[in-house]
Length: 73
Image 1 (cartoon, helix red, strand yellow):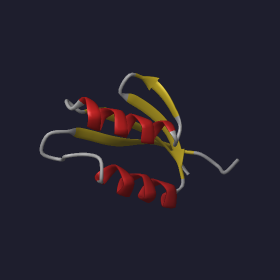
Image 2 (cartoon, rainbow, N blue to C red):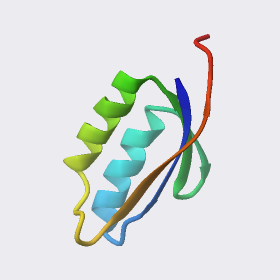
Image 3 (cartoon, rainbow, N blue to C red):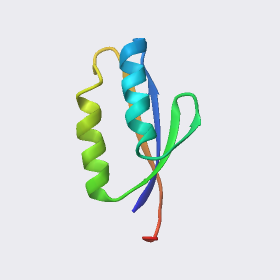
């Protein structure tokens, strides 16, 4: 499991709300457009796949920063 910092900059209110709602289901918000999430490899892949459907890559910025390993709880 890895701790990820997920950040985004999305100019469209509708898309930003969809991304925010999705990310809130995976962990906690630490700032308006910053989330922390501990994810297994499969959950990471699942989240990335779901986010791709909500983000326009030519207009939006979405970044995942892996921080550290966490043992399973």
